[in-house]
Image (cartoon, rainbow, N blue to C red; front, side, top):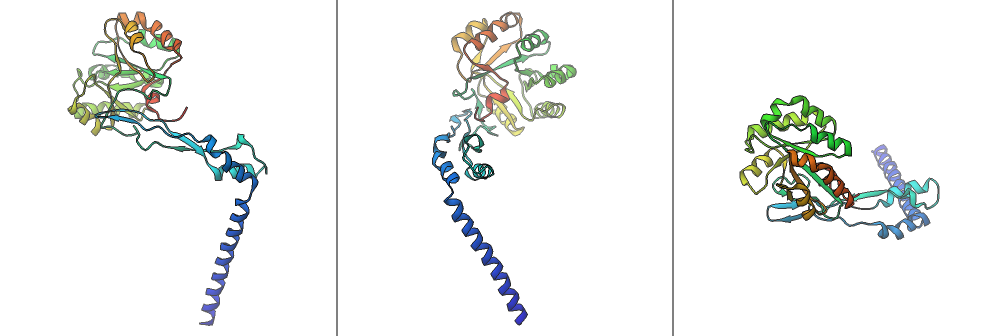
Length: 284
């Protein structure tokens, strides 16, 4: 019994020693000039997150915020024993409302605080996309190709080539008709042959059945903010905004105007990014 009390006493003494040491360490730390300086300037570096905007069945992505990670910043500066703003460490503040995995809404735009737009090309059964790809490659532009299921089945090598060149493959269904089997099959192929871990559906108007199918397959459903028809360049000039998602058919008119379209967008100080980047809520 005596030995038991001695053991308990020893454990209590060790515990108290650790507790007391930690208390002393915290007191010293709290009075450290480096730590206090980090705390004093922390509010200057804080950027509040921007929530995604939900309006009925539509959503526009938000933007992450950030703030100084006080403890990690302190540890880095303590090694050199002086304050240095270049050693500040930041942590992400995620928005309370986010587009992330929000598959039950139609995405209609990127965040308008970012100077980015995205191009979508519609690939139907007998489409030849080589001219479009060559122009995009020439300008160093990434884009999304929404492909019809029949085209997808008959152009496996081209699909692999597009993915390897950092283009995104979207799911157009079969003749614009979506069904559970078709969406699941195309999505599985796309995610297995490349590093594309997110899939996308396309529509130009709200369609509850389509949205449910795509939601169940964890695909984002895109409604473009600019749908070009007769004269793509003029239509884009009239409607271009930060965050625009621009739909282009693949035809002679688009092919002839695409260089001018890219140059016009660039002249407006907008970056052309693929849809994955456009929906990314990371802070620039």
